[in-house]
Amino acid sequence: MEIIHDEKNKKFFLTTDGKEAYVSYAIHNKTMDILHTVVPKEIGGRGFASALVQAAYDYARSNGMQCAATCTYAISWIDRHPEYKKI
Image (cartoon, rainbow, N blue to C red):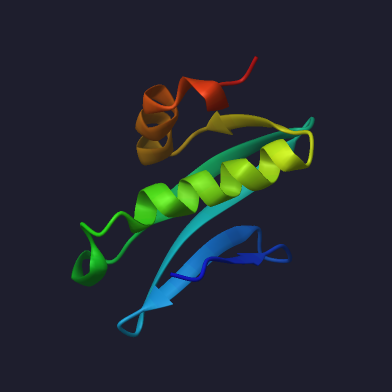
């Protein structure tokens, strides 16, 4: 699985079976906020949402940013991964 970071459009995405899954984000005050996580139902259930959220937050952390979530999926993901919670 290759996750691509599209900085211009503020999203991380992957394409499989002709379908695109992505997370979109915003950055405010050195905090990356995941706004939306979208995985088409045709490719759901394969862990793509989790991998995309983690890729985004790993990027944020490696660039000195905090992690936050507006998206309901990202909120539940960050609750399961407390090491990514905003300090």
